[in-house]
Image (cartoon, rainbow, N blue to C red):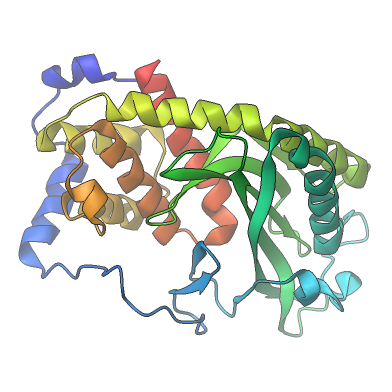
Length: 315
């Protein structure tokens, strides 16, 4: 892994950087405006939808966004199960446990839920006759600090995902979110993933309580990382080299994510990043690229890799 101190020895442009920049120069850059209207999801296309202070970006076919857990009522779990040996945990069980843990634990630390967002995605029914809404789930809880330990630019969040159709594990994680642009970043230090096998309900329940209990301490770590990155000035060329290092590290699942991150670094959607000439700008460009091109169900694992990359780089 290449650190910041070694950037000067790297070629001016990597293959990824050259390929991306050529497309930038050849194409017209379409800027995402802060006051751009947001739309609900249309099948097969990704759009943005504002819910409270949380904005999720989705391009799952047929996905829907809600601000109430009532959307989980009536989901027929059995109809999605891929086999008789698949041990499910319902989306509602996860949400109820997160809510109970947050209600019980976080007030002691001056942490409170400010808003909730839930995404349901489609999946094949067990008989493969058709797809139906409810097979996949992503939930996000926005948190506030009321005891003076908050931050003006980021806030703590809890994220959870689940799949009833065998396409993914149940995951619970803690992370942070930018107020100005809603970029999300989840940390592997507080991420628990569990396959759908025996004892999944007990294991996920234990994981939820462990993660929620650690939210304040983890958030302080995120604030410290932000301060560290803001204290490292970089040039434009260094920023592109870091993006290429991030790609080699595995931060981006595909070229589209890398291109989105590189575009966001060069042409930030928000003025606060356009004025920022530190590594914090690169970090947010990376989380932007991953978030905009992965959909909510891959956001936790994708931004977890970004978080690990920058923590390793700065030590």
